[in-house]
Length: 214
Image (tube, rainbow, N blue to C red; front, side):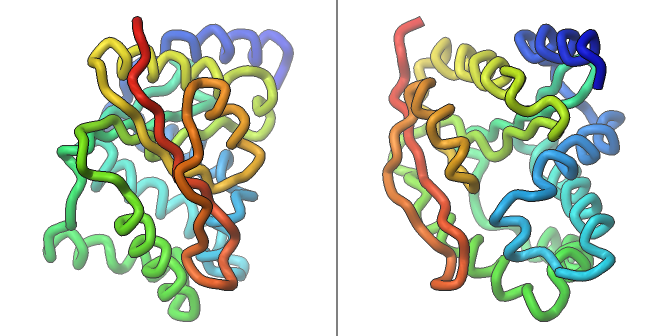
């Protein structure tokens, strides 16, 4: 990306716009790039020549089946980053029909050898997720690698939290990368617990943020 493109992305991240069905492909491509080296994704995704296409298909499935129907997907007008916020009241077990519908994509993403890893991750995330109070769940925040470290993620986070604080809600997230924990702490999140889906899994961090005055 050129300096001008990065500056445009930074400005766009300050006021991200809502994505819709027509943006699924572009948003999935941004998330696919953003999480290409993510420790958790590298752990549960298949480890062969199909990994790249499998990750992209997996991101499209998450956007189509969960993010857009239940939450808010935002991105800079020109793309390059994506955030997904889901209200806690929309969280819950998927229907049997939905699980069957997404199973082929999940199996393609993990391969038979790693489907258990993803299942273990989903299980512990569900167990740790605090559901006693209504809150905003930051499910994903991703920035394309070429724009990381440029303040894009922090601007996206700040814009999302402004809405959360205006609603008087706490917020919750899981950080799959230790390098991102300081960023979330700067914006008021505190680590509740460090966890691993299995002993051989990389660590992740469950973080909570109390509502802050507007």
